[in-house]
Image 1 (tube, rainbow, N blue to C red):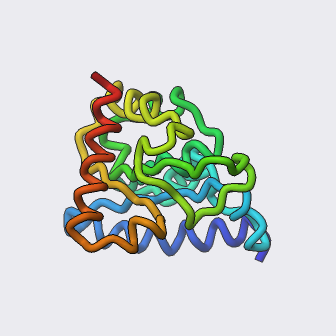
Image 2 (image 1 turned 135 degrees about the vertical axis):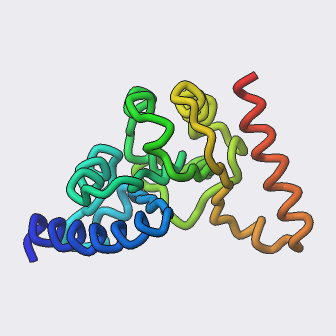
Length: 174
């Protein structure tokens, strides 16, 4: 496949999926993958920015298809607050939050190595959440760290650490 044929095939398949979901009252959220290190893993880089995801959502053409916005991918794709504030609340299906590890240049960050939200301050979580607040986002927000230290904790401790991180991130808006 060329990039365009691949894009069209994915759009067609997701159109069919989204139609079935829409008919049942279920929304489909699409998430792009922002790290530069992920761009070389496939023949064609596919959906690594908010703008590219918008193109796919438009091509799918079914109501209820929207974005899963992830602070990690947003930051590493170098997307902007203005891009988020150009969306509407109903465009966003869900939000994932993380932070980036310290000491790794932006273009060398690896997708499966993340920190809890607002843990390092590398990702401008306040700006990200502020943009969501500006569009009146009222859907789910979840932490999505891929973090060895957190994974080694027992479930209660990991849940407590995650809840504390989310509270810390939201406190930045006060």
